Image 1 (cartoon, rainbow, N blue to C red):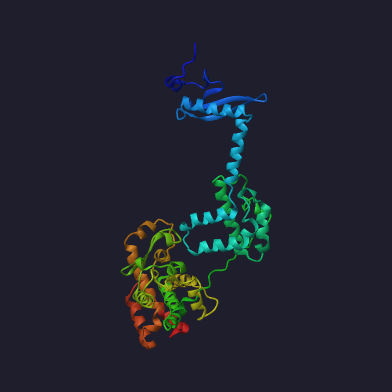
Image 2 (cartoon, rainbow, N blue to C red):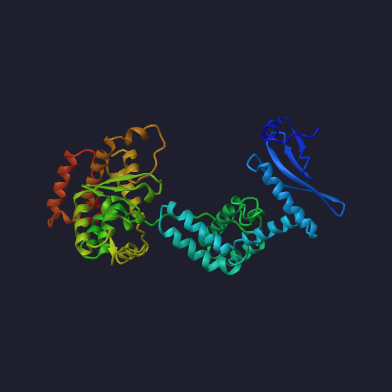
Length: 424
């Protein structure tokens, strides 16, 4: 009795088997252990048996499967092995899908850079890869890159450019790791440090050097100096000091982030990827007005012909005052001032710096009261920073601050010590 091949019979096969289609030689419906069904064409060439898949059932119907078998038998009649032809087609597809390191690196940067908190990171990635990596591996397929290639890139700069070489290695590792994840490379990551390159390259010594900071007692004198120069970079530096913000947060600040007297920095521009609100003091608001007057037609607050200031702009402004200082160091100056000269809590100070607070009071400090406490802190900081400009009469100004000291808590004696340090 001829086997039934109607759709009900085929769908009803409920145990692992190879169901033969009687009227089409070599055609089988293979029922796997998980009861999924696939069409298979079995044929023999030069005494060797081959199986080639034709697709899953019922997506591929019996009529479709028979049509495919007819085409494959036509190949056999012309001396062509369908299994070998399929393998050749796979190899050709694989060759077409090969991607060079430089092509994939550029694609990786384009894909990942929107999530990087600092815009200059993209430029740094491109520059280091273009300078050091591309001349060695830029034109190589991802699968062809070896440890020797990575060493050829790193060894010439490993001991003389510690930071650059370390970051470059990490960037190559991330790119190769992404390629492996996407199935574009089969071998292990040749730029991996732990358990791999750490055995071939000397470890870089970690530096304990911190950003050079100006002693907070000298901040008022600096602010007085900066206020005398009507330049955008000088306005930006004053704004950075008064808000205790990071350089990049100020450089890429936009007008739409100013909400009345609060600067709302969106999460994507923050290091911690969390929105940060900065209460603005009177002088900070004045600086915004001056900046708007200097360059009105730009979305960026501190700009040069419509574009954000370069990362060197504020640094050069501070270098003209004193060499060896960094812009980031003013955050340390602010933190030292809070600790040594005020009774503001450390949690408020840390939140003003947009640092993450890990203890149990974090949730409470995130609520509404925190902004007001930070506003009080930033107003006290403003009073301290503008000490020199508050009066042309040092004695009057000093007396005013003594009175403030007695009446305004939590500002402890911010300018009493400053005066003793010779700032009057």
